[in-house]
Image (cartoon, rainbow, N blue to C red; front, side, top):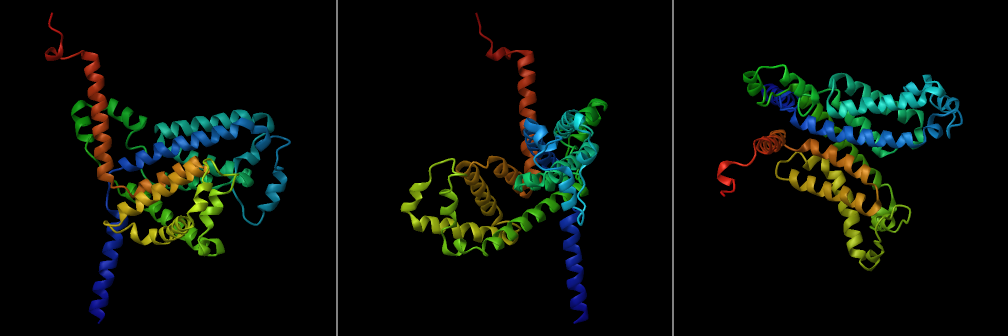
Amino acid sequence: MMRAFRNYLAQVVEQWDRFFFTPVDPALLGVIRIATGLMLVYTHVIWGTDLAAFFGESAWLDGELIRQTQTENYKFSFWWFVPVDAIHLVHWTCIAVLVLFTLGVWSRITAVLSFLIVVSYAYRVPVALFGLDQINAMLTMYLMVGPCGARYSIDRWWKDRRTDQSEIEKQSEPQPSVTANIALRLIQIHMCVIYFFAGVGKLRGYSWWAGDAMWQAFANLEYQSRDMTWLAHYPKLIDLMTHTTVLWEITFCMLVWRPMARPIMLILGVLLHFGIGAFMGMWTFALIMMVGLSSFLPTDAVARAMSNLTNRNRHAATTSERGPSPSLAKVP
């Protein structure tokens, strides 16, 4: 019995090691960096449309009041130390850092700075902290762990520029990274936790048991970007959509790890968030959740797709520079 237990324990350790520490190509991490960075730039530019209201001397939320509410649970924000007359300079400096992070410039440094920027904005104005900001912070935090600038970045381009052509060809091959795998696994696990507790939380509401929760969302004029009131004539469809949503969220953390079920779970997730964006107007939240779901895509397939896209663009650019081939030239 002890031998069987030791064998079982050895298998668990081996599977744990394979799950977290198998080197993978950082291509997918680079794609997630670009998508997350674009969302960070967009959301923080929106902050800048009325900086005085958020961080000014007569801000909606007084800084001293917020600090008093956070005395028992310290939350970092550099905005506590920014003079009122410097808020515009600091804000646009932050935007510049986020742009550099998106482009992959000094990615190891700008990833850390981007995370500090995200949490600083959120904790200074907590009433403006929504699901979008939380997912932004989560993705940025895990992008700090792995080499998010190893692919599709100016860092990579600059490294190739300083390298001989023969070395570039060698470096163009996928270079697996353990930390890239760790970062992706942390994003995946966090997504599973988010969906599981979202589903369990829904079970506490009567409308989700009754099957009319989706109707309440569609009929809410505050979020209604498309007229979905025609669904009132199809109560069975509303009931199916409501229970399918809860079932998908609760089972996602189990079925997404199964190779046969993973495509189905991801497709349903994309459809769910596309519906949130199209019919409830919350496109930014829907898109950032899709970015989180993309962490479950096969890294090798993403690397091949990006490589094919890059080669196609490079070939098109080379062809345009050289002009049409002789076989296609018009003969007088």
